[in-house]
Length: 341
Ligand code: 13P
Ligand code: SF4
Image (cartoon, rainbow, N blue to C red; front, side):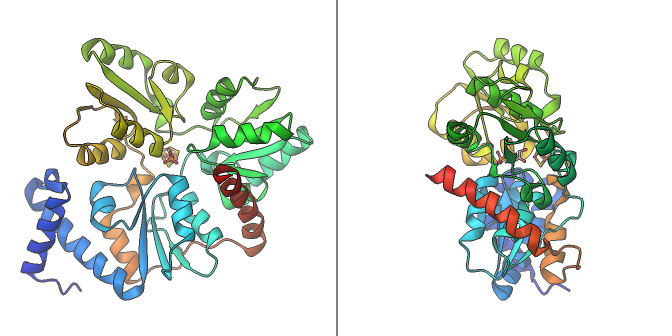
């Protein structure tokens, strides 16, 4: 039972308004949000917990309660450097699992059991073993959007923030790479690196339910109607989209691009939470809506975060068997070494 009073809710609403959440004022919703964020922030202190929030989460999660905010790479890295005892991961399961692998002494929780990922679910450890048997000697480079079991079968993990750099380094010593599981990101990287799918880069058939469905014809239409628009797309989009945009990258790179440029408008071809955050961070820039919601990311809410902090179920605790964790950790640490080196 919450013990928050009216004046605390008013104060918290003011704080949230100052952070730019005024557009959430629909029918008293801001007060509901304030009651939740106030209690979550109080419980975080009491329990020495931190919130990692991916940029596809809602602005009330990111701005209201997030301690670490960013893309998959930054959140994995941040999770290694916190003194908290508890990490509540507001993102999807593979991200929470990565934090659990990197922090065996901490408790890592995922607020929603529905926070999966279509890419992560597209490939199993058994599939990777099959690929390795079919392509002996190839290096297995795995996108972070995979389970710990799949990571454990891999030589190195990458995120959208470092895939190109790491692949270049890996090709210095290897002729052939198995890149899993995103076939679109794999094809986009193959093009940038001058590699041939099926020959020197072996791809898997995974895709992201958010990024696979954008339509390049819509981009052409926006370009006609909004002269000077800068079009940015996430690297998980198919190549016909990537061919039509000004910039391809991960969410961290896309946000930096918006920050460091001065286009007449921005068309952000990615999950909707990214655009919501960009609008709040850069109120003087123009954004055109073209986005899709990730049902997995949006399964995390202030309500289930509060429940997790109050009384988590045993299923919300993210655990990885030690033998799998040890091998997955090696592949994740290889990523940190190659990305930072
Ligand atoms: P980023 O690492 O670019 O944030 O991507 C994560 C993700 O799930 C994109 O769909
Ligand atoms: Fe997975 Fe796509 Fe959702 Fe990212 S946006 S979590 S890749 S389904």
